[in-house]
Length: 369
Image 1: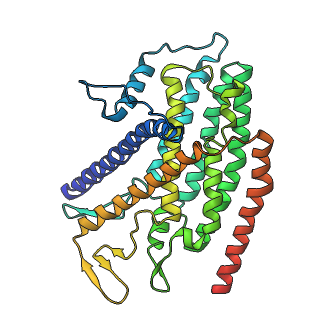
Image 2: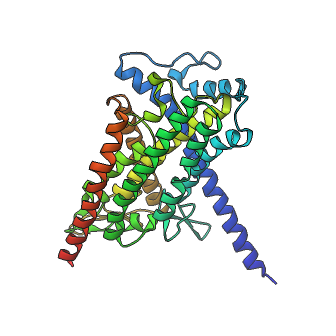
């Protein structure tokens, strides 16, 4: 028989979990929608164009801010076409398998430390499993099923060609992606993302933050390259070669096509959040602790705990937006690789370098022990 106190704790726990899911996942989906606008705005800026600016509500355009809403309505009311020869079940299931793993991965991202609410400590992370990095790689690998099934179930030769390219590309770069994270686990001694972020709050020589970019700078370059390639964005967009009239989603329309497009932008936001979390301290702010700022030399500035939590969450958001902006710049700066160049880069360049980084990290840890 449960006691009233236990029932209250269970209700508060359930309410806190639901609030974190709605807050973080809702915020992630909102930012993802805005990234579709930012993509076109950045391309217009780099090509000396104005970009989207016509969608209006009550005569207000707000410089194109309503275009994501207009795009969503357009996709919602378009004809949902399915080829006659397509596999009915797998054709409908592929967009779900492409989008669901990406949205699930946001649950593992810590967007803050904790905040005290009505006397209870609310951890600012939806889920913090001890093997978070392994779960991250396992769940992210599931998205390849949606990509491949989209091309295979369409019964189109051109869609199948794009699916084969996408599957080969994603599987290849997932190997390098996992190996680049091994060095982080060796340095910080944990596979939990929240533990890794907290460990990055330490100071090297009393004044240098122990962020991943300091302890694993080479791994950051390899991770960002492999992550963009796994997301199939330019210059690694061989699976969506518009000029070659191929693409694993070429037979999709309406909201099913929107699911594939939304998954790509959501994964771009996820890559940005992971770069901030693993290599740039996540929610950490140099010299900011739960009681306030503590500067070298003994100077201190006390702050309420909710203020420090708000500053840490804001720091995480700014770092994430910076890496979103960086990916947009790369998208409209670099030319596309050929497919043989793409695979050669992975197996003959990035993979040996990621293994060398693990060996160098192990040697450095042994030397510093």
